[in-house]
Image 1: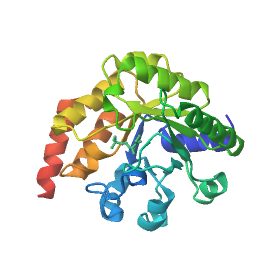
Image 2: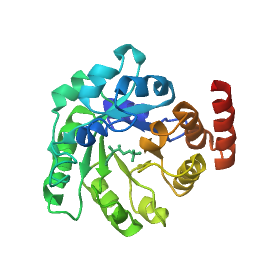
Image 3: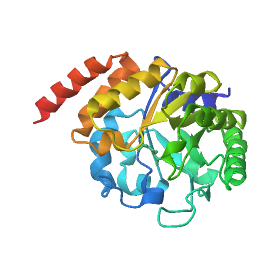
Length: 265
Ligand code: 5RP
């Protein structure tokens, strides 16, 4: 691996723990003003110190993140569809590499929609991004998106998607946690981070899912709604960080969460 690629990978996956805490803030690119991300700066600023990287679009980066903050950025570079349109999966590449370099990104991310009529287009989009990313030393995050079909998230389907992303050259893959998750991680030769998915019932559910994912081979999280759509997002984020980087159990993470929540009230 060349120096630039290595350096950027180290900004995403901490070399001392081999793990990553990524904060996903990119939802507006197809959902518009998502609940609790209506004013991005208000949501992002308090969480920034606890994220190894933030994952978002160039628009929100420029308008809502202080360039002096030292934030490491994984830029969302796919889009072109919305929740109001007929085909969420019909995405293309939205940002070129000059722009990504100008924004000093640690990586770029794009969604693939395997098994849909747009799989070819999105997989070729991933390949094109990898061609450019490898040229400039910028790692590509392949995101195994499921659009509105959340029930697709089983280990057979996600293992297929993750492996394809890795085969096409993604340096990291983002997917969902699922039953038999080790089937997904063992057959994917690059690190996997998990999305949180829609808001879970309790904080303990979030800590359990994070812990299970790590125990079954995930390198970390790239989580959004289960952090900032909940009350006490900073406490949640710090507890998740404890699981990912400090091997906390879900119980220890919950104790830390409760302590931080009480301190801030
Ligand atoms: C969709 C995405 C999301 O925009 C987001 O990053 C997912 O994060 P979460 O599910 O934790 O809210 O990647 O494919």
